[in-house]
Every structure is written in C-alpha cells, then in structure tokens.
Amino acid sequence: MSSVLDESYGAAMDAALALARAAAADGDVPVGAVVLDESGTVIGKGRNRREVDADPSAHAEILALRDAAARRGSWRLDGCTLVVTLEPCLMCAGAVLQSRVPRIVLGAWDDKAGATGSRWDVVRDARVGAKVEVVSGVRADECADLLRDFFETRR
Image 1 (cartoon, rainbow, N blue to C red):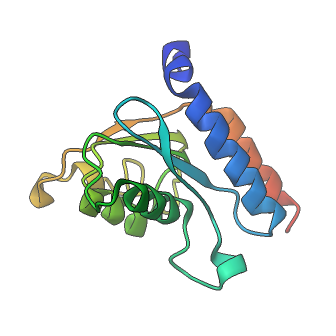
Image 2 (image 1 turned 180 degrees about the vertical axis):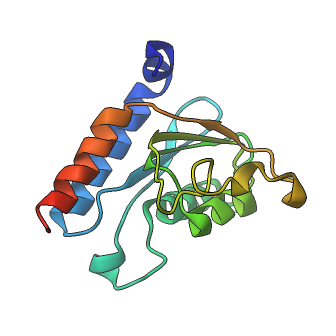
C-alpha cells in the first residue's frame, strides 16, 4: 500500500494494533479499532472483547463507536473516521452506517466475513443509500500477520 496512506493513518493504525494485541492477550481474536474526529484526534477506542465480556456484539468496531459516541454526546459521528485492523463484518458495517461514519480505514481484508468490499460491500451499497469511503491496506501485512499468528497457535 502507498506510503502516503501509511503516513496519514499510521499513528491511528499503531493505536489500533496495540488494542488488537491486548485483545489477543485476553484470548480474543486480535482486532483493534479507533475512531478519529475531524482533526485526527482519537475519540474512541475498542478491541475485541467477546470472550472477556461473553458478549457476541463486543467487536472492536462496535466498542470504538460506542466510546466515540459517548465522548461526543451524540450517536452521530459525522466527519469521523474508523480505523480498524481487520475489515468490518456485517454487524460492524451496519453500525458504521447507523453512526454516519463517512470513512473506514482498514488494515487486512477479511475474505471470509468482510462487509466493506471483500465478501460484501454493505457500506457502499446504493440500495441503502450508503456512501462510505473505504481506504484499505494500511499496514495490511502487519495486521494480517497478527491474525495469522493468533490462529496458528490455536490449531
């Protein structure tokens, strides 16, 4: 991926990767996410917590969006950017649409369950009026390696 994108979103992806590593340390799939406001400041953080919280909806993206909304005092996250280590699933793509986030920056694609361009493309589906910009491949190898290493230790 272009070094320009890595430079633009590198610090945010660093934060998301640190959250992903924390999820792995707790036995959860290593996915981390941060929400940036219009100025690029992190206003929301999340990491997978399905195992820790025994909650099927505790995906990194959902938790980051909740954190950002709480800090903003509004469910509308217009102008924000979601930076996540793995392509969002259907549930998380729906949450992006519901929160009005206009941009997703992702590391690794999820060919099995991704819903922002690989398996499905919910966030850009004209049938639902979706127009979310998807920026892919930021630190893709590092994000994919983290996931691969996590699953190899469990096989």
